[in-house]
Length: 190
Ligand SMILES: C[S@@+](CC[C@H](N)C(=O)[O-])C[C@H]1O[C@@H](n2cnc3c(N)ncnc32)[C@H](O)[C@@H]1O
Image 1 (tube, rainbow, N blue to C red):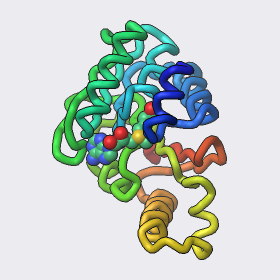
Image 2 (cartoon, rainbow, N blue to C red; image 1 turned 60 degrees about the vertical axis):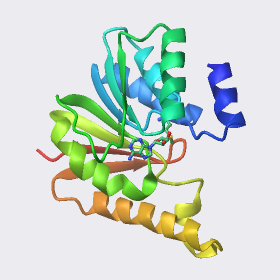
Image 3 (cartoon, rainbow, N blue to C red; image 1 turned 135 degrees about the horizontal axis):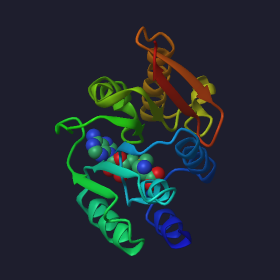
């Protein structure tokens, strides 16, 4: 794991923070999660961490960047979890995934969070959850007015729109947790 973390740092690949990973692993254990869909594999770091919780866990993860996809395949082999993780190369907004999942983890392009949520909520088991990372975005979502860069401000505005979308959602109830880079846990209203 240290090697993957160092590789991600050296190559500027954003991977989930340790605190967020520990939260995910704990959630998976406590709720007996067995089927996971991840949007945004990068080099496979979070998928491997989730697979290592229990060898009965099956994960489908989607990555659109070819180089990262190949790196993910290599890392998954190295950790010997290839029977548990299926990596799909493609844009999550263009492809369709079959099946129902206990946990859908959204960790891809932040500007597209609402689209990912709307598309993949149909793949969620009735009692499952959608977890989204980076709701705090390094604390920037709470300090929006101090951001100088126009592009960054636009991105942070989109993350804040996503938060609003979750808070006002008629179908889902969401808890936003101050863990790692800010994690949202959304479940279907009964
Ligand atoms: C934050 S990284 C994922 C990190 C990974 N979940 C981890 O913690 O190890 C986001 C990844 O999502 C990918 N991505 C962005 N938009 C995507 C899309 N529409 N479909 C598939 N992958 C996407 C990016 O190429 C990037 O590698």
